[in-house]
Image 1 (tube, each protein chain N blue to C red):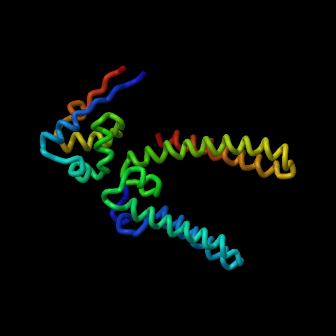
Image 2 (image 1 turned 120 degrees about the horizontal axis):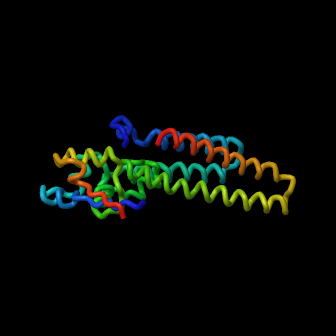
Image 3 (image 1 turned 120 degrees about the vertical axis):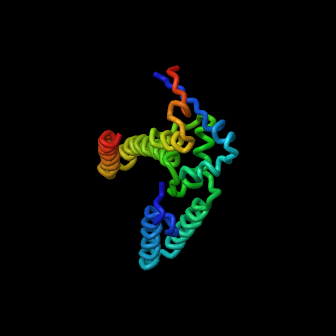
Length: 69
Length: 135
């Protein structure tokens, strides 16, 4: 089954006035990884998804929306 | 993700091993009197170091890091895995073609080409089992 993952990362980041580089540094990943997650080109591991959610003080479900396609 | 200790090194441990091995090959080739080949290998060492230094800059692209085996995060490793999988499949296909050509043109070398294909096949099967245990 195909799963479509959409994230709120771009909205959450821009609401906080952060650049992709700022968020990448905070999470210890590359700027390209943040960009790839934001545009839906890369689905992060559960660990990275949890770190992102924790950073924004939200649950994983509030940051990532997974729909069966 | 690289550790802080790895970040302080001029090259990652993997690149230190690769560069060191290439440097040894360059010296051994020179000692054997093959100066032109030694220079080619030495240039390879220098190019490796330059690529790695570029890949370790803060603004380096993902492709620069993956090409230089200087992975920064899980996505870099995922890109590298996908790329190396293509390399492995290509190596197996080319080796099969090579074996057919060797059988026709140089049958006395067929054991070597078949051995190469078998080694690649065994490596693939072992890698599958290691991956299955880790994932």
